[in-house]
Image (cartoon, rainbow, N blue to C red; front, side):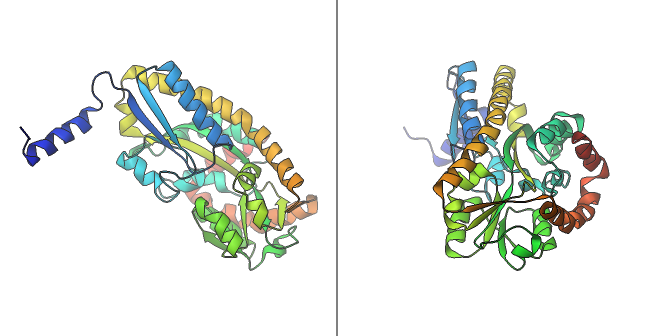
Length: 329
């Protein structure tokens, strides 16, 4: 005998609310936008391995790399709707939820990932993991990618005047937009999955990214020059739906937290090695020229971008900027 549609719908709703049937593993969908060979891609796979080992038969972690499920523009919405349980967006993606995380986008804020790590493990950095809880987002960890370099389809890229008037792809960040406007470029907000084609067809002239992303996405094939600027960082926050996380059985939450901590240490330890290897592979490919900058070159970029700090300090908070500066001392 078939149930009337109204009762069938009610039954389906009850199942959705109560979770999986007894004995069925909890499905944890982890969506991200980069390739599996990047620091984030490898850390996500390590998390799956560790979580399923710590919680055998209790969780089924499904990792979807390279925007297979959701791209930059949709993944936060998908998390809040419960369509996925974990994502790891760039810290640049959160400025519509809080302005405090814009500290990570300030140009030349962190001279190295070691300084970045020191800040993140300190009290101010740890506080930022929970700053979006009222909006439904809970940070579980910071995952490193690496220092940002600039690239261009032009043969020269050493001083700010070399990119004046050029169209640059950026993440959806007001700070990054201001950074490129400060040096006379024309910033274009664009999803990560669209960048290669945009560079290839001339929709944009350049972009900024880490060595591992430049290599894995083949940006070096469609750019003439990569300048070793180290002008910023690309870092991620692994975030979950706070309501979903709080509703997990305590043993599941504990096991997932432990797996996340171990995967974080693994991925962050790999980040430097992968970027160094990616840089060498780009050199070996011989397609894009890598330009190194001397102190005078870097000073010119720093001076041109300095007004960005002043503009965004009120929203970020002077205390956070000072704490980040202290980490470098």
